[in-house]
Image 1 (spheres, rainbow, N blue to C red):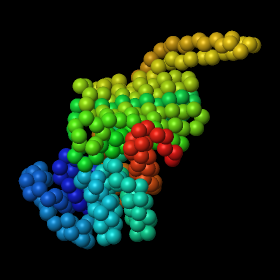
Image 2: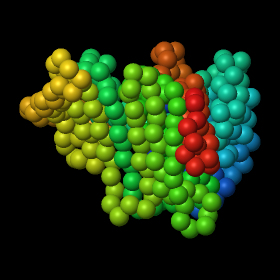
Image 3: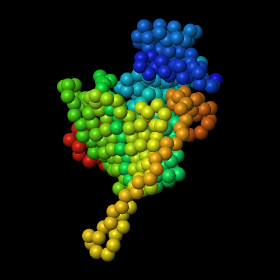
Image 4: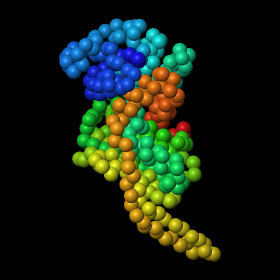
Length: 334
C-alpha cells in the first residue's frame, strides 16, 4: 500500500485526495494546508484522515511514502526538495517548477535518492489524447504537417503566473507526447491588459524539423470556452474538441495533392474530400488513471510518460516562450 500525503487543499487538492483515496493500492493519510477552513472541509469529506497545518509533521512522518503537491508553482521547488530529502516520492502539479534549473535539481536529487517524480499532466491520460497518440504513431494521418491548439476562456486569472505558465503546460505536454519530437525553436507573442505585468493573451509557435509547425493559442479574455486541437497530416486531418460530450475526435479524409508538370509554373493542385469518422475513445476519468499510474510507477511498473524528465522538458519550453515574449517575439532556439 502506498501511503500519500497531500500538500494543498485549494482548487485541485480535493481532486487529488478523492482519486488517491480510491486508486487501487494507495491511501491518503494526511492533508496539509495553511487554511484551517479547507482542512475542516477535507475532514468532513474524508472522515478519519489526518489534517495538519504543520508541513514538517506530514513530510517527516515515516508512514508517508509519497507526497502530492497542489500549491502555487513558486512553492513547488522547495516543497518537492524537502520531500525528496526526507525520502518521499513526489507527485506534483503542473508546471513542474518555475525554472529549468529548479527542475534539473529535483530530477538529479530524485535519481540520487532512488526516488520517483511524476508531474500531473493529466490530459496525457485522457482517452482522447491516448487515442490521438495511437493514430499518429500508426501513421493513420500520414506525415504530420501542422499542430494547432486553442485553449481559451474568460478567467481564471492567476496572481502569480501569466496565461502561458497557467494554460500552455497542458498543450505543450500533449504536443510533445503526441508528436514524439522536440521543437527546434519557438516564437511567442502576447499582451497584458490590466497593468499586472502578466500576459493574459499569448500565441506560441514552435518549429520542428521537416517543416512541421505547431501553434498554441492561450487566452484568459475569450467570451467563450474553447478546447480545440487540429492536426493536419499528409493522409488525413484530425479535429479534437474536448468540450464535445461524445464525438470528441473526428478524422477527416481530406487533403491536398500536388503534381508538377514540366515547366516552372505548371503546378497542379487537387483537393481530396472523403468521409469523416469518429473513433471510439475511453471515457475513464483521467486523474484516476493518473493516480493509478503513479502508484504502479512506485511499485516498479516501469517508466511513465509524465515523469520528472518529461516535466523538465515542458518547463524548458515555457522558459523559452517567456524569453521570446520578453523580447517581443524574438525566435528562441531550444
